[in-house]
Length: 481
Ligand SMILES: [Zn+2]
Image (cartoon, rainbow, N blue to C red; front, side, top):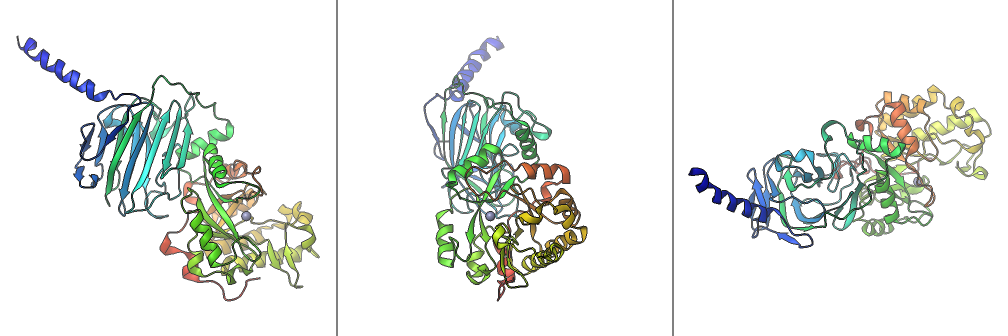
C-alpha cells in the first residue's frame, strides 16, 4: 500500500530530474543569476546583482547536468587574493578533483599559485598572467572528442589532446575525459570570485575525433614535468626569421611549455627609446607570453628610463658584446670581431666582464652564459676551470641573477650547472632562436633538469610589479664595459 502510494511520486521526480539533466546537443544554454535552475550553489555561494558571488573557500556553482563534448564560456571577475578552478569531466559533483581543472588566478608573479588563469592544471600548465583582478574577463573551454582547448579573452592559452592511453600519477590518477559536471569553485580564502553569465553549448557525443598519438620520449618527460607543476618555459624566444607570435604560441602549446618573447633593445636595434619600447609593449599586451627585454650591447643602460624598463616581465642580457683592454669592441659570435691573443688572458677578461655586467646592470637573467668564440669553443671544459666557474656562480648568486640553460648552444656544461645549483642559483631555460625553424623542444634543458636534479623551486619566475630590480637599483650612470 505504502509502496504503490510512493511510486508515482518517485516516477514524477525521476522524469523531472531527467528533463533537467539532459541538455540538448547544439542548443545553447545561457545561465546567469536570473536563470539559475540548471546550476546549483554550494558552500555559501550567493547571488548578487552582478552574478554568482563566490566568497568563501570552496564556494561553488555547479551544473545539474553532465556534458561530454561542449563549448563553455564564463564571464569572471576576481579581487585580490581570489583563486579558483573550473572543473569539467568530473564523474560526480562531489569528486571534482577527479576532473580536469582550469586555474583562475590573476595574482601578480611570485604571489599565490604559480599557475595563472587558463592553466590546464598539471596537464598543460600556464605561468603567464592572462587577466587582471577587478576586470571582467572571459574564460572559455572546449572539449571535442579527445581535444581540450582553453582560452582567455579569445586568446588560446592551453591545448591538450588526450592520448588513448593516458599517463597519470599522484593526485591526478583518474583525470580523463568523460561525461561530467561543470563546476566553478573558489579555492582560496581571500578575495572574491564573481561569475557573470555562463554559456554551455553541448556538442554531439557521437562525434569522434582522433586521439593523440602515443607521446614520444620527449613528450613523456614533458607530461611528467607538467604533472609536477614544473615551470617549463622557454624564456628566450625571438620573433625572428618570419616567426609570428601565433606560431610561437602554437609551438609552445604543441610541446607542452610556455614562451617568453624578447624584444632586442639597444643601439641600432628595433627598440631604442622609451617611445619605441612603449609602442612595442602596448602592441603585445594581450598575448599569452612573458614580455621580455633583451638588453643589447652595453649601451642600453643609457637609452631607457627605469620606469619604462620595469614594464617588462623580466630583463636579460649576455656577455657576448664588450670592449677589450685594447679598446676593441668584441662580438663573440662573429669570428671577424673576436680577438683571442692569449686564451688564458681572454678567459680572465671574459670572467671579469661577466662579473661587471651581472653586478652593475639591473638584469634578471644572464643568458647565452659561458659562450666561447669558435676558435676556443672546443676547449670549453679545460678553459672553464672550477675557479672561473665559481667566480661566475658567486656573482650570479650575490646579484640575484638567474642563469639561463641555453638549448641552442647547449651551455653551460652540466658540471657548471651542478656547481650553480649547489650554490642556490636560480635557472631559466632559453633557446635564443634565430629563425622560425630552430625553435627546438628544449632538449638540452630537459637533459639538464634530469642530470642536475633541478626542482620546480630552482626555476626563476618574474618579479612582482613592486619588486622590479631596475626600480630598486636604477640604471648605471655609465656603461659597464
Ligand atoms: Zn636573444
